[in-house]
Image (cartoon, rainbow, N blue to C red):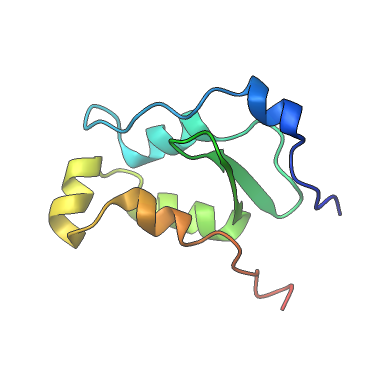
Length: 99
């Protein structure tokens, strides 16, 4: 399993994720910020600052299934916080199969 992070040059070549707006759903924001070469068992995403975050694939999929159809403003009004904060909190959590 390849667990190395992207090189500094690869990170420099990638633009930061587009800023969130209410025109796109959460799933569309995540699709736009997903790095094309994920690691085995993990999905890679760019945050707004252009930093790569690693999220276990099963948690990313579950998040999209539960909240992907919402628009960012709908998520904020329903849960009183930014969806990006909640999504980023998934990084670094181990898959139950790996624990």
